[in-house]
Image (cartoon, rainbow, N blue to C red; front, side, top):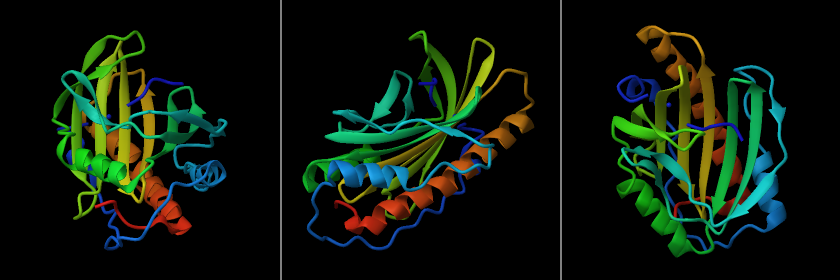
Length: 229
């Protein structure tokens, strides 16, 4: 899988986040079965705004933790989920995306993930980003909550690794028994002005914002609307 994760001083303004959600309803909830989880993850494909893509096979992992953003020590994650379904999309060698639904076994565990999203992921402007060779490089990062309930967070990160500038937009939302997450990544191998960097962040963030909203809506359409709190 391609290296992940994009802009703080550059990225806060680019977020323009408006993934508002209806008021939570405290309905009894149960985890989706394997087939329902797969159908939900596959329901909304990556937009073709950045170009036509190749879709990779759906995969399932267990006990994985969603990475929301980065600190000076690396990944800032939420509690591990019981199961996560993921699909990756490849636009070209330099552009890719992914959609994941991290499902928790109980309402209490989902509530703990929401609490961690609100209070334990301080996505500061300056951070460290892990690279493919397991080193850490300086990153510029910006983030904001996506709605008044603070049940979602959008993050833009940028960093330079071996002369290649990496951009990543990460959107993470808690709904029902799940953390819904979409990521869009792009890598630029040429020098860019500050304006070009800002434009790149805005473009990647806008694509992911629209995609993420549709994925969250698709998840809610399966009767799991509402937050854990």
